[in-house]
Image (cartoon, rainbow, N blue to C red; front, side, top):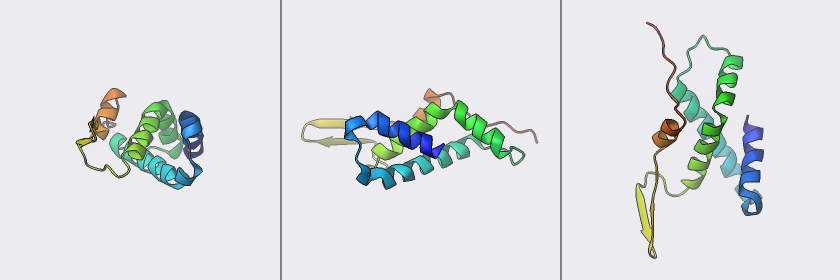
Length: 109
């Protein structure tokens, strides 16, 4: 999945893609995948095949999470920013999960 995400992000950035930032982008991909796995809270009984299948189903969410973490470089934990007449407010990671209807997997106790 990491290679596919990296290629899709390169395509998304187009002429703005800079190979110097590839290691940061790979880190953000890893961070997004780990965040997604934590959010889904996969049971120990789930096989890697089942987890990967579920993650493929929500590929767009993981793509958006990667963009989120990449764009937050240097802006971690800011809720708003104002500079030279430009005002920015950032969504939270939770908003991305809500947008994609991602919920943890329920378990019976």
